[in-house]
Length: 261
Image (cartoon, one colour):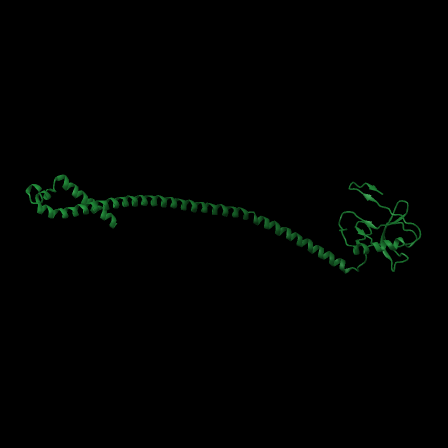
C-alpha cells in the first residue's frame, strides 16, 4: 500500500511539473538568471542548484518508472494468483464431489449385498433345524440298538470240506501260527479261489510302504465290496503249504463291466 501511495505521489509530482512546463511556469528561472542581463554571477550561483534539481527530478522519474513496472508486475502476479486460486478451488470441489459419489456407490453396493442375507440366514436356520431333527432321530435309533446285545454282523463261513458259498473263511496254512481270515470266491465250477487283491473304486490308497505290503492293508468284507491287499506274508504261507502247484488267476473288469481273465 505504501508503494502504491509513493507511485501516486510521484505521478502527481510529475504531472505538476509537466503542466508547469506546458504553461510556461518555469519563467522564474529566466527572471532570476537571464544571460542578457549580464549578471553572470547570479547565473553561476543558481546553476548548481538547478542541476541538482534536474538530477533529483531525473532520479524521481526513474524511481517512478521502476515503481510503475513493479506495480504492473504486482497486478499480473495478483491476477495469476487469483486465477490459480479459483482453479485450485474448483479442483478441490471436484475431488470432494467425486469422493462423495464414490462413497455413495460403495454404500449402495454394501446395502444391496446385505439385502438378501436375511432370507439366506433363514434358509440356513431351517436347514440346521432339519439336521437337528435328523440327528435326534439317529440318536434314538442308536439308543435302541445299544439296548440290544452286540453281535458280529460279518458272517464267517464254516469250512467243512469244500466251500460252496463265496465269503469270508478262516484258513490255517501248515506254517502259519494261527488261522488267517481270507475271502474265498467260488466260481461256477465249484472251485474256490483265495482273493489276494481286490481293486474296485479307489477307496483304498495302494501307494504304501514295504512293511504295509508285507502285513496287508485294506478291508475284507463278506459281500466282497471293499478293497484290500492280503499281504505278502500271508500269500507266502498259503503258497508253500503244499507240494501241489497253485494257479494264479488275474481278473480285470473295465468301466463297462466287461470282464477278462
